[in-house]
Length: 132
Ligand code: TYD
Image (cartoon, rainbow, N blue to C red; front, top):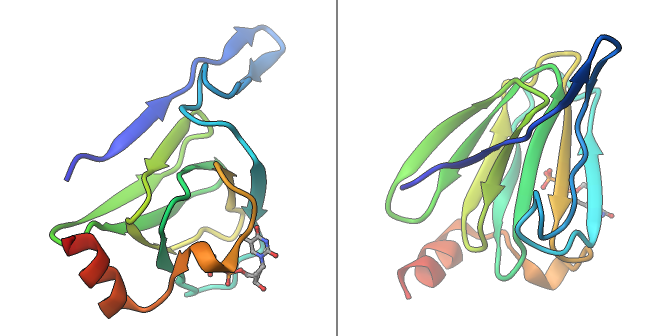
């Protein structure tokens, strides 16, 4: 499985860093939704789903966390700990996020609005769909 990590180029000057992300320029889809997780309790593992259509980019803009990816055939563990790194997650990819540092802020850019029908929450169903 190929892990696709984008490295965003900051606008750096003596004041610090600024990263700007534009749809179809830095991000390979139209950004319809942004959400983020913070204050994640110790030991929490979340996600446990795949999406039928939705694509995402995960950016740990503060702190760090890990992401477990599973395409139905292989798994990968990905570390997110830089605010300039974006992990691309295609549709039909099972994901779990874990090992959040106390200060972690995990921001997600998503290609679709929130739609529970797009979720695959049953792992066996995910495996069936991934095998098609
Ligand atoms: P949930 O799907 O449980 O998060 P995760 O997949 O990371 O474990 O989402 C938590 C709650 O937030 C749940 O009640 C659904 C709601 N939610 C929205 O209303 N809009 C959104 O865009 C997202 C991602 C979640």
